[in-house]
Amino acid sequence: PIERMRIDNQGNVGIGTTAPGTKAEIYRLETVNRTTYTDLLTVSAGASTNPYNGHGGGILFRATDYWDASGVLTNQARIGTILNDNSVDRFGGSLFFDVSPLDDGVLSRAMTIKYDGNVGIGTTNPGGTLHVSNASSSNALFVGAAATAYGGKVGIGTITPATALDVNGTVTA
Image (tube, rainbow, N blue to C red; front, side, top):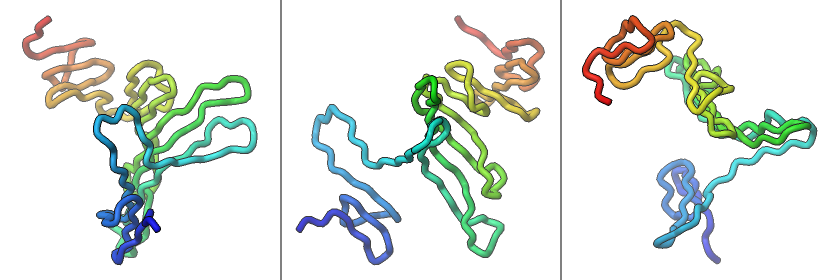
């Protein structure tokens, strides 16, 4: 018989490998000059009632809280999908990234990639190709080491822009 899966003496699980280096490792040997894409892992979630909108599958990342010596696992991050269909329209799936900003296990949406390709950072409903939103008073956009957005104004080379676009330095067109 051909070995398809191994659990080693450290508790590591290997699929397609006899020497898993982590708790779970999936390996597939690809041939030279491959021209097709091969999925190695599938996460599925089904729905049996209408509307189907809002459900999906995901991967949850958990870890022990640094401040909690009891070793209790808390949610740290999640990558998931949301189906955007309803009883009238069929839109497709979106991808989202959740994080736990306070190390308390409470996840909040950090970024969404919608079915239409629009990316939202700080918003779950991006209105354009890249939509950055920030509910706090801190900077919503920071580019490089010396660029920032403040009060609806963007500064490059300054952290206190006086106009809609304030550049401190040389601009070349």
